[in-house]
Length: 127
Image (cartoon, rainbow, N blue to C red; front, side, top):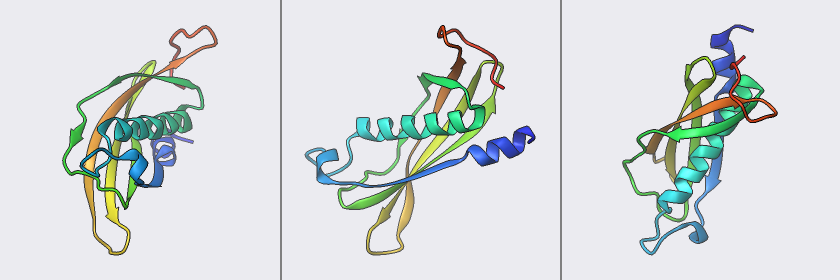
């Protein structure tokens, strides 16, 4: 399988409902909770691409464009944007959907960098 096909196949989509236990006093999703969900989605995409042990080494600018209210559905889409020697970058977009209408829009975006590691936690070439 060539690299572009592996990148396409690694795209990861996760859906979650936003419940009150994940929201702040404004009834919107905690920013840290959004970042945790994004990191998890990015980790899965990175692992699906490389099939190696991957660790997060950085998160780039995360843009919170729209508040995510309780009682909505979020769709997290993670996709590989760059493959380096020992690292790769995964972009994650969060879309918010109202439960009882077709309304959907992008709410949050960010990029995460992962490094492939061996059993001694030393960086290795991304295969």
